[in-house]
Image (tube, rainbow, N blue to C red; front, side, top):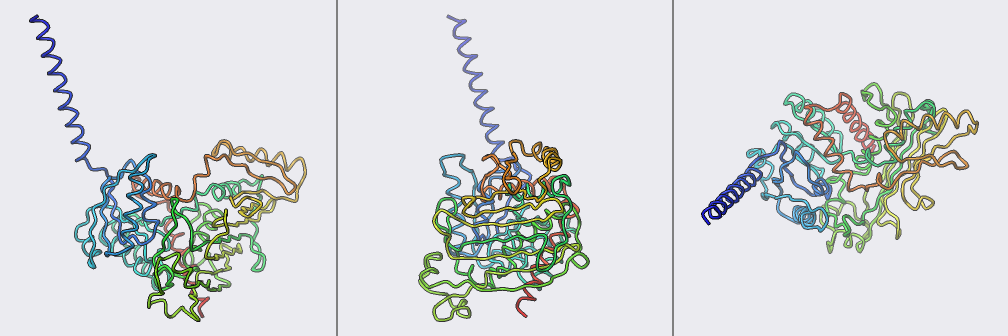
Length: 460
């Protein structure tokens, strides 16, 4: 009996000790800070929430939000809450929110985190970037970082300040992570397949990228409600400086991978033009939930139609290679379709083409098109493709009349929303290393010089 009592007492003590240790561990988990902590400033664009669609190993779950009070911050918080409460793989963000007209000054005085996330109204974004890096904070910014020539000058100052203060300033280039874009870059670097990048001409560029977007769309399964300021080019920026940022980035990244570019020596703008997309009052109401046009859009309304200068194109040379990028915005995509992308890179042996039309069921597909039908070239393509297969297991070449289609397993098609986490993870790798690749900052500066210079040219 005595032995049984001693055993029971020992087991009780062990259980109590284990419970105490568990509580200590839980308390430790709650109080231990991870190396990175997010500060979200004025989240007016849904991209701010998409950065938080996933959790990150090195990022604290507490997010400090500073914004002006209104529908923009509410829409952001609602999206984050949906990610936190979804049935599958819910996130665990804890939002600490400050709203007030002095939100930027408050954030800078408190500095409760070390990574500022900016995705919202672009009118003041460059200023927010500059003030954040001046204060010694890292910045992950949605595109565009600058929407006009004055903004470009301030952005150059911001990069100089970031370098001085040993912090990293980076923009969210999601399109690098779309699989057909990644593979187009990969195959362009294989001489056996692509040969050499052609120079092209102004009327027949060697690299072209075209993008079609829509004002009304679905995000995370729900209709996207856009803020009214999104349709004011003074606040959002024109199409020439907005979506084209992605396209210019892809041209640089795929045609000259890991090469440092100097915009004053390596780039020359040849031509730029801009046009407007017209919205009816009912379309504007559908996408904004606003009953009327706000006063700041009065300048763009004619005969009740809202003219949004969201379309633009530019032709330019990059290290002597002729390139063209263009963007077009429609109101809504036809049923079963969505945003589309077209891209071509012309090589001496083959053209690498991404198409996303009806024949591709509106999914991007990469083709290798060539005039050389010889057995020797076919064998060279098969051999050269192996390096890409090693990097992306499962991709295959499927023969067709024009050359080949690159078939891509479903696992690589993770969708636009997932690319935000991929960009964030890459940025966190750079933060851990304490630096960006040598070519990144000069190439970001070159990119924004081109877009803002094109806008200046188109408006003359």
